[in-house]
Image (cartoon, rainbow, N blue to C red; front, side, top):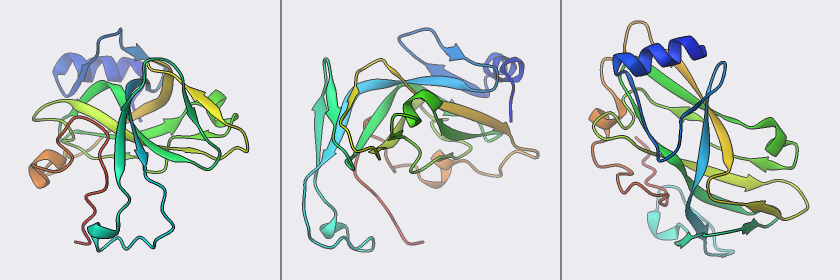
Length: 183
């Protein structure tokens, strides 16, 4: 795990690229990321989802939020980080909840791994799968702190990166529905 000192060194060396309209919020062992204004809401359906058949996936409606967005109890949404991230093959990442939000029932870590080489060809936002596990609605706002990005140095670096392996996957720079492949 990288400390704030190491994170700054990797940013200076060009192995971590962060593009943001705001100041970058580097903590002692993470980078605090903020919520962008684009949210994906799944259409409600009781039909069975088959991961191997994309025609069964629920539709995802993209919504731009200007103020408050209420995430309902047990609802799952997709959202993007305000910051666009690029990692070299030397760096891998992990998303972690912000404790204060987790204590309210907000879980942003349904998928936590950020592969080495993610966003290396062009920095892009991280898509968060956000789940309200509480029994109460929770208010989300653009630009609010939403998660921690924890970084790790790989030794030796990965032989190939995410963008090399999946050059066309999830490239629209916004939260998008699953492109799952069983291979």
